Length: 434
Ligand code: ACO
Image (cartoon, rainbow, N blue to C red; front, side, top):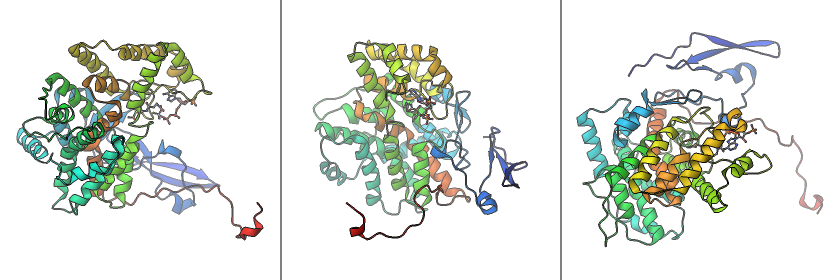
């Protein structure tokens, strides 16, 4: 891996109230530049205001690089398209965690460790029993990951941290499959050590004690691909949550559980579920794609084109390009003619020609095609965001580890501009009117 030492050789000058303040510039290895405002408040009393942190660098990170204008995504320097074509999810997980591609021996050992930690403690069955049958699997998984901290004490200690990392990657598919089995009232299917990561997950989801379930290798590969594409995406909402929670020295299980909750929102990982619901709605209403695009543009209408737009990508999301092709492969392998895929392709065509979407730089994101593949694999809609969480696990962990080992790390604590009432006296209750 080639890394350059970050340099602070230049500065920017901010003029405020007749005074000038010099802000050091920080450069990344891809030549991105940041003005370091850490001392701004001490020098001027001023803070910066940036709702949604759209232009705020919260850390320096060597894990993932995105150039949203050019549609580039790289993990540890490797282009996502190459990893999608040539790698597998556990190899990518190692890469994210360690910074380098593993040797054959390292990958074999990591795969073996992950395989041996997939089983859940038997007492965990009672955890699922306590939850309502119709519970959404996302809060079930968030709660289950937090609950792992009750089974494994001091998970961040020097002697246990490595095992905690392996446990999270190993047990997440088991927790996810158990949350699904619980919701449909079927017995849990134990993990099988002879199966690879994705095949094992599909087996735990779809096998029953009465039926053998043969996993089609092409479908297991499609799932593996989806996991690779979701494995990291630098400082998004859920990852920043993981870092923020971890910055208080909360343990890794607690931090990841918070990340899963953040991912659940419809504007983040929850969008994949929303995309399929949108496509179903368009289909049910007769398939008038143009009408839906017009509604998404209408500011008086709350509809958005789900799976379109991104805070960072102002060009085609490279993950969506890989998934569009995989979508066609999976459906043709299964012999499925999907009306929803037809609607999705048409939506994309119309939106990419439409002035509104062009001028707002709105392109399909990773969620636009992923739901169609999940659906074809037989994954129920309310499990889509859980699939995202399985994939994002190594990225969250790598970011948390990087944050913890960074000497510059401090507890996350943003500032605010107060807009409420100025000082006033307490009013007794009988003098407050009705
Ligand atoms: N459909 C229609 N208009 C949109 C869409 C959309 N999907 N996305 C953004 N816009 C418009 C907004 O109305 C706004 O228009 P205006 O400037 O004329 O008022 C402009 O584009 C900017 O939108 P913001 O919401 O300010 O952009 P932001 O960067 O905050 O949001 C987001 C990004 C949340 C992803 C947004 O594009 C969106 O809601 N997309 C649909 C949900 C989605 O697919 N989320 C998944 C994202 S990928 C991921 O998290 C894995």
